[in-house]
Image 1 (tube, rainbow, N blue to C red):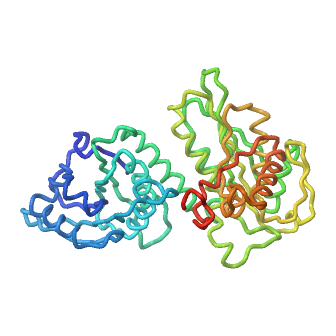
Image 2 (cartoon, rainbow, N blue to C red):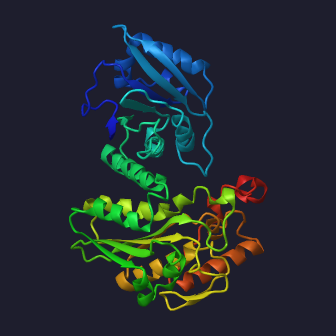
Length: 424
């Protein structure tokens, strides 16, 4: 279970029973911010000791300690101290990556974990911090020695107004549900079982319908990109379309997700180490799909197109030099079967644009290497390489008959500071 609560609200009454607590804060914050619920659990003596501990601990580390309460019971506490420095302009407010890395080290022994966020700027930092907390406690594992049945309760500042507790809870829950799908091994989640999970998940959702184009039907309908990527697998590729209908006359929103349940690289086989983790290549489709679960909050129609396939190896696999016809009517020559993402998405995006004429079309994908080129991640705007990247990006957009979105180098997090004028 997962819950997000205000630190001073009455929506959750705490008892004095022994629990485990994770406190995420800065060294300076506990000297001036006192959370009523945390003070209730630690009591005066415990809170004073915690303030002293914060002064001596090193920022960016996690400490584990126990408190003996007045009734003699033990309270297990993890103190996660965030770096005192301001995050870089590329990082989210509140050091979310640090929060995630620290909380991964928490080994809960009870069924309930209370997470308290005492931050310097709750208005800016709370949302990203809550997302990091939810990400650190996944829902899925096949490990026989690890239990994930943790009742997670997150307490945020009562001053937070930009995001309500319900909104934060919705996003956090969807992060965990997406991670649950991504964490499934490929022998559990393949194109066939993925469709089964989707059907079970959306069953009973009001206003949601499902349509599936699978196997040879993809080729017959002209989706040669998606078909060519998945035809080598024992489980045929599929375009799964989830639609939520709304009475609004506004143009619909379309989410197109890359759903490669495992990417071997095809005949351009990945290396031994490069292939590990390729079960996560369906993360884009998982994010698109999970967002539909809360579709009752939408005020416009939503269509999620999941391009599901396994990029496998067999006598049917796509070869370098093969030429395939995409749904857009454009033909494409394959020189690297490991560049399968752009093939499945070109079909999905073109199908969505032609069939639904959306007002907003969102591409959700794990395009590992290609995203570095698409976002000009290692090049300033003024170099010839950047201009070449923009030209390539425009050609990629035309292949699906849509307009590509170019992200400015401002978003770059790897570029040397010496070539960025705004950092001098």
